[in-house]
Image (cartoon, rainbow, N blue to C red; front, top):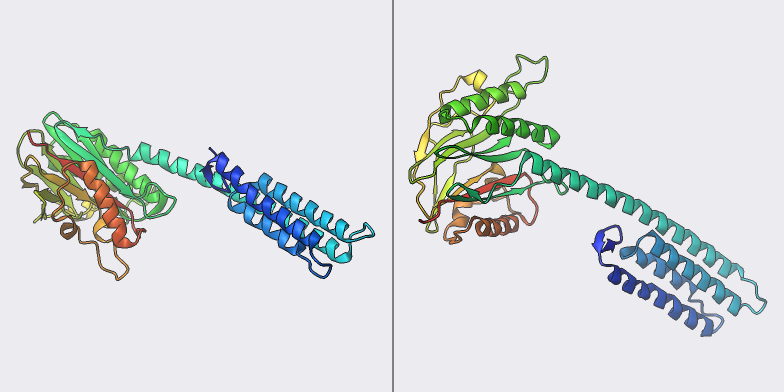
Length: 368
């Protein structure tokens, strides 16, 4: 693989093969120009050769083609001038070719430099994602799981949406959340909450105690130094669940987050929380009491957890993505296969580009 025209990973053989096009153009134009009547001048057409080369070649290739075009124009001028000197017209064409060629080489150098910087940015963002938001394991005890993260910004790989899982002695604890705000500040806030969750989720505390601990952590972690009275400026919506390994209801505390959906034999059911808690980070203002909700999660069911970037994704007419309606009738039992279909369907709905980050987790309780 070679570095393509400012892009990377373009095959070497393909770039070399495409170089034959501008070279053949130079040869054809030169031969026709030399054989043409004196009043016909095709030399200006030589500029097309270096002009098309940046579409598949780098600075060296462009420089080579431009040099060949200059040589061809010089040869044409000498052969068509019996005195052996270039006419003023041919001299101007040679100078124009030199300037165009030099400009294209500079353009390619700048383009490749920016392409390298972009590659580095992508590498850093992907590394940050693996550190802050590592992929969920395919197995969480007896459960099967998969996760999908779609960043709104074209070159980003991570934003303010978050999810994590932790095993306990009796089951699996999951969190899915969405940080208020965007950019690196949101990434930092997400990392702080995920760190607190990973520290506390393994303990034998109740779900309410775990969420209270997360709320206190967010209250202090999201506060700027010296702003002891400015609670509520930042917060995180989240849903925290406790899924038992054996058959039994899922326990859930919703902190202002979109409700989970259970898909059973292609029929979705939204698990709304009658008594939702405020978002994490607002506990100091509201002094919440955490109500633990529960719902059945049977063998063969799929549990869908997601952020509002999914349900608030709009199509070209402004219609939100109707999650429950769209997944009705889907029979994929494998979490990865389900997420693959979901990704295609969501991006089709929005026309290929999201305006907000979106994340989804799919958990399946296999049939024994």
